[in-house]
Length: 159
Image 1 (cartoon, rainbow, N blue to C red):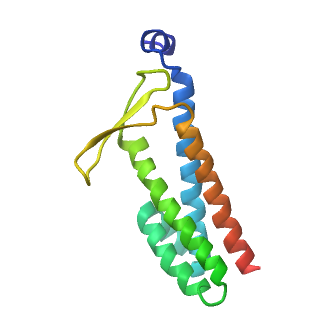
Image 2 (tube, rainbow, N blue to C red):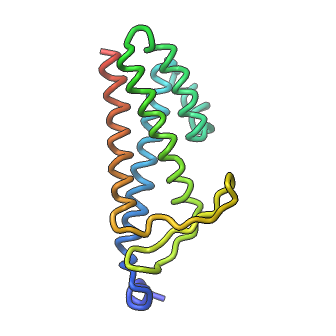
């Protein structure tokens, strides 16, 4: 079945949905890369240490490890930076819940904007997500903003 057939039969603009999913995944991967890079920077890891450790860290663990490392480094010397970093990490962990749904949910081309159905391991409940126009692109923009805020906060504190 071609994308045109999907669009005609189910009413969804498949290319827009595929592009939105891709944008979300791209922005999240960039956030994860910056998070791990800033964690390595704060921990003063050498390149070979970074290459050995960071690929094995899942995102939630990396956020929690960064929270401890950033707190230890910035809480007393740069309290405003620490407060900002703590907020960024909380928001990043919340975004990780969206990543789980995007990556592990079931995507359908139903409706005008598509639909994601995800079954939560924690609540054992099924839910419908991302069926409103622009939801994924809005989340991607928020993730990009978090990434930039994270980079800039540590850059400013390290200057």
